[in-house]
Length: 266
Image 1 (cartoon, rainbow, N blue to C red):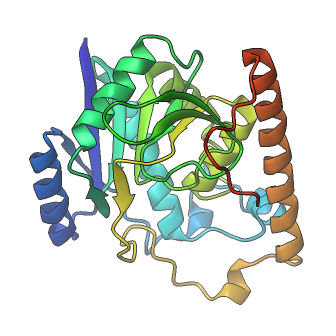
Image 2 (image 1 turned 135 degrees about the vertical axis):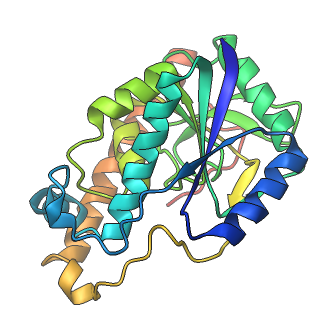
């Protein structure tokens, strides 16, 4: 079994993004396979049976765009491809990433720690956005000035996600129906399972360029449901409450107050 397989999600038309990402990953020593992204920019979401618009409006507070469905389908495709490989871990990367010079060293150390059983039952690691709130530090990394943490409130960016095989299998079982963008779904799912892991500093970050795959062209008044802000605040409250309960239980079971790293209050 190989240690990991990396998959770079890239639209066929986004050749410049591919060139920039390839140069960075090659320099960092991270081999990857390019995955042709699902182009949903011209897609009518209602033509896809996987999409539940009523639930999207009820829970997420608005309709989803075709681009958002395309991003979701692309991450599902990566999980499937990873499970078809012989790799122990799967790394899903989006092509608008910025790769830190020590990214491979951080990645190797994280995988080594996880293989050693430091975070039992984990499903996914967010390597593209640092944890900010409701997390419990587990171990300081040698490769970077960062801590590996149980991410009770999983960061909602999908620039770089490391999957375990069990995690990818569970994600595929839970992925449908679609009723929110994939990054928000991973947070929603993560606060239910408490199987997310994160870092206080990450080796991959979004470049800041506007997303190609997730471009939404529908006007806001068409996409948002009634009482959008109330629905949004309800969703945030439910997620944060679940994350806080997981944090309390985790820290109690570990027998310590896991707050050596400052956490955001909001």
